[in-house]
Length: 78
Image 1 (cartoon, rainbow, N blue to C red):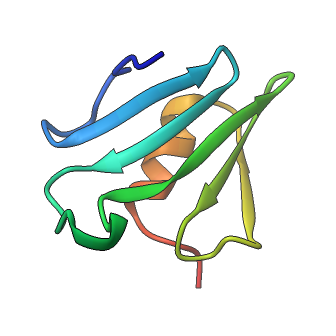
Image 2 (spheres, rainbow, N blue to C red; image 1 turned 45 degrees about the vertical axis):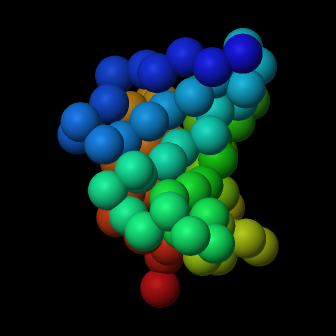
């Protein structure tokens, strides 16, 4: 199941993996070694949890899918 949801750029893909989880990719990045994959977003009730590939043990929480996707485009938290 793949669905692109409101991309913020023409190269950003938000693919639905299930009704409550999404894979976020940026196809403007180098495709080798999976560098296009930014992270994942999962919805728990009314909260969206974003996990950046660069920081797999760090989770960030947001009130909307759009905010979670935007955070992933900015890169992993410092």
